[in-house]
Every structure is written in C-alpha cells, then in structure tokens.
Amino acid sequence: MALLVQKFGGTSVGSIERIEAVAERVIQTRQLGHKVVVVLSAMSGETNRLLGLAKQIDEVPTPRELDVLLTAGEQVSIALLAMALNKRGFNAVSMTADQVTIRTDNAFNNANIISIDTDKLESQLDQGKIVVVAGFQGRDSDNNITTLGRGGSDTTAVAVAGALKADECQIFTDVDGVYTTDPRIVPAALRLPEIHFDHMQTMAACGAKVLQLQSVEYAQMHQVPLRVLSSFEDGEGTLVTFNTQYSSQVVGIAVQRSQALIEIAQSMDALQQQLELFGLRFWMVANTAQSAQIVVAIDDLPRLRLVFDNKMRHISDVATLSMVGDNVMTVTDAVTTALNNTNIQVHHNKQITDCVSLLIDETDHQVAMETIHRDFVNSQEILGNPSLLAVS
Ligand code: ASP
Ligand code: MG
Image (tube, helix red, strand yellow):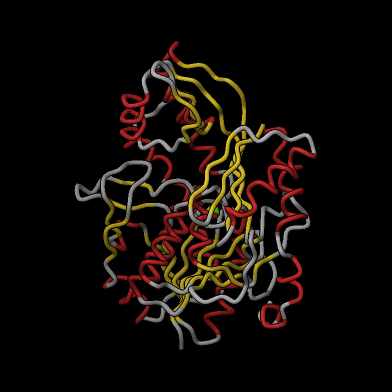
C-alpha cells in the first residue's frame, strides 16, 4: 500500500462533470489499496473572477484582504469533491489550511510554507478517509489567511507529500506531462518522459506554467518524487527526476508572454532597491545614469504607475523565450541567426548556466518558438530512444 498525493488543477475541476470524473479517478487509486490525499485548485476561471471583483474596487487591493477573497475558490472545489466521493460510498473529508495546520510566513499574495502538521492528516487517513486539501492557501503565525502565489496549489501538493513522506506526488493537469515547449503554441512539441529537476526548475523559473516554481524547488530540496499526468487520459506522464538519460542542447523552450519593456527615469541603484522591495520580478536590459530600461509583467504596471507615475514610459509589448539545457549557451549565436533569417529581431539576450533568454517582440513569439523547436530541440532523441519510449 502506497501513500499518494494527487493534485488536480483548475481545468480538471472546472465543472460538476469534471469534479465527478476526478472522484472516479481518485477512487481508482483508492481501490488499488493506496492511501490518498487530494489537493485541489479552484474551479477554472474562479480565481481570476474573484481577482476581477477585487480590481473593480481597487486596482491595487489590500494584500491581506485579497488573500481572504482568493482562497474562497478552493474552499468550494474541496467541498464539492468530498461530496462526490461520499455520494459514491467513499469516506472523504475536506480540509482548509487552517484545519490541516499549514503554516506560512506573512508575505500576503506570495507566502512561503514554513511547516505542515501531519497529525490531523494522518489521523484522517488512519480512519480510512480520503482527505481533500485546499491548495494555494496557508495561515501565518497570527492566523491570517495567506496565499502561495498564482499556481500555488502545486506547492501545497508537494509540501503535503514531503511532510507525509508520500511515495509520489502526482500533479494531474490538462496536458499529459511536461512538453519540450507549450503544445498550445507549438503543436510539434513533444512530451518528455523524464526531465531533470534542474531543467524543470529553470523552465518553471522562465515561465513554463506546467508546474509552479516553488513546488519544483521544494520537491528538489526534499526529494519528493514528482510526476505530471493528464487528468483526462491514462498514461505515464513525465517523471521529474535527478536521474535521466535524455539530453539535448535544448531540452525545452519556455515562454513568458504579456511582458512590457518600460523605461523609468531614475538611476538604477535606487530603482533596483525599490523593485526588490516590491518583490517584483524584472529583467534589466539597459541603464544610464538617468534612466533604466526593464522588462516587467504587464500585470505589474498598475503597481509601478502608482510609484513612478510620469517618470515611467511603456515602450513596447515583448515576450521572453528561454531555452533550457546543459550546453545551451553554445547555440545562442546559431539561434539568433536562425531567428534573424525569419525576420525576427532579438533585442537582448541573457545567459545563465543552463538557460539562455531572448527578448523579442510579443507578436513574434509563435514563429520564434516554432523555429527554435524545429532546429534545436533533439526530437530524434525523444522519439528514437527505446529506454525513454519504454516509459511513455
Ligand atoms: N487557484 C489558484 C490560481 O488560480 C491556485 C492554483 O490554481 O494553483 O492561481
Ligand atoms: Mg497550475
């Protein structure tokens, strides 16, 4: 008998029919004799809907109150799934972060898990129950409600799996694994049967949405076996592992869209401090004594406007493409040439050990991803390696 943590994302619980299907999927695992803890996201679109309500009141809502609001979505989905399981004759109980005792720091909207008390979870499991935990939420030391950042249910799942020493943390989603790039943008993208933790971490840091960055870092640190699977089809998915035989100069291409190139009339030192204080992610592309050009998420512009007002100029909408792989730096020039040949200009590039990021116009992202994928991702290795195919 194994102990499994199964996490289902928003699309997997996006309607009553899908919640019923998740109940069936969980029951399959339970009937194999395993103990199951389920972690859920809110029904798809619900977190955005709640965020939209908040923004109708205040473009930059009070962080504490935003967390009180946004956690409502997961409370709905866990109750509905527990009902669906109970109706089928399986004893299930839903639990919020408070009921489990998931402690975080007090960084509202982007909190970090500090500890998870396993006593209450274990006592429910020992009574033979399926436990359905609300993802994305925690409580700080003053018992305020906190959230773990967008996509944070992945982190709840991995942290619960780590605390319980589960045999595997299974992330069920609307794609059947981790792909070489986003298959919704590049249909030729291929599922990776395995991916190294380091590459997965870099992909997540560079915008791959399939797993939240924090969840990968946590799994890596606590050695939680992690697998990404489809909620809708059977299959082995992608195993995130320290041990993989697959290698390619470019293992994957992550894209970050909806980014803005902006100029702020302020010296870099002061600006850097302010941006870090905000906890805001940015890419510095140029700076002079009087001003700096940076890339930020379009969603962060209202917050920045509050502070910098008319010192700030929105230059253009851009996207960043990040190629991930052990020796990826060696292909930077060849990639830039290949993109220039398709009339795509690379405005800047940034290289760190296993990642090269390119700044391009937002409108070029699809052709650029297709070009790099076609010319630099070693599809033959994925399709032609029998040991890799054996697990697919
Ligand atoms: N419901 C939250 C979000 O939409 C958390 C999650 O889905 O993981 O970001
Ligand atoms: Mg997600």
